[in-house]
Image (cartoon, rainbow, N blue to C red; front, top):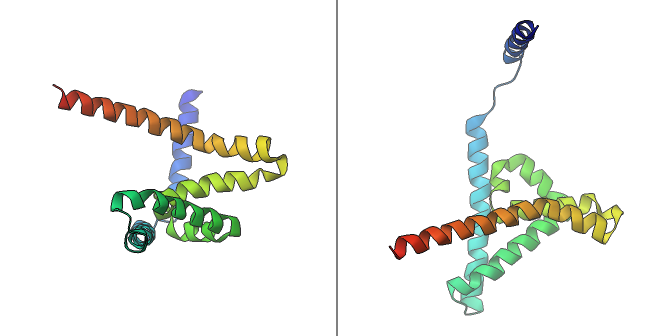
Length: 152
């Protein structure tokens, strides 16, 4: 029975292989590069504004720059513009912090009818929670490795 099922699955895979369109890998890569690069260029421009007009150091300007990028992403998500952008950009819209802000804002908007706490709060943190936990755990291990390397 399992041999017959495996054979059918192979036949089905062969059937699909001839009918699936090829993925435009090069075009998608260029779009992701342009979108991610443009997002980073925008962030660099915002950081330069903080440095030159508010006389912040580059290190101090980093946090408000990220906050503004998150706010822009959340606003564009709420207006439905970020979805159009991410369809065109692919992975280029998901990699920067704006992609994370989009994911959280989308989850919040999707469940807003269920209320602020049960709908928005809990569903927003279903996405943010694992990312925050991974970030904290990764930072711990990187810090531990750095401590071991520098003190041995």
